[in-house]
Length: 154
Image (cartoon, rainbow, N blue to C red; front, side, top):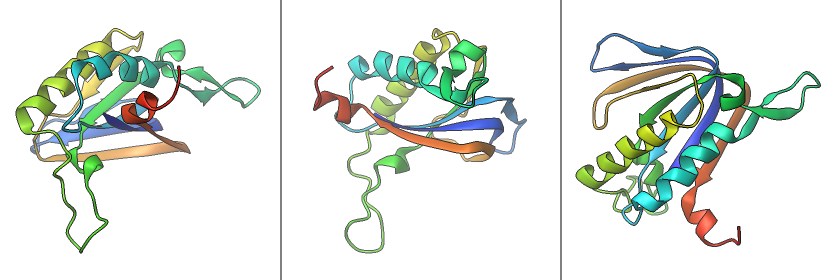
């Protein structure tokens, strides 16, 4: 699984032209699911997202997590995170998980993230047309990939 994590002062997603789903300070997480990902990948990624120290303490150091501060997260599914643009002009998405498998892992991630001490978890809808608006704070943006963790010792 791949997550693009952004520290934000505010964000919202509008699904199919509906009512905005908004958060204040916290995290926006764009979540991509790869064809080889499994449910075993989800808990560690959810914990890492909520507990990653990307917010500044009183000394200006990145020492606080969204969970510690009681902040929220906004999660949006994004299969294009597994786009391969290394050949030609049109990206290939063959490494992105199929709809049913990806949606199951997306829903599992939402449930796991909800249990990580955040004050709330807002989200888009898998496979829907969405417009995302955010104010990146810092900016602080990180890419987390569970495949990277499989190749290193814990």
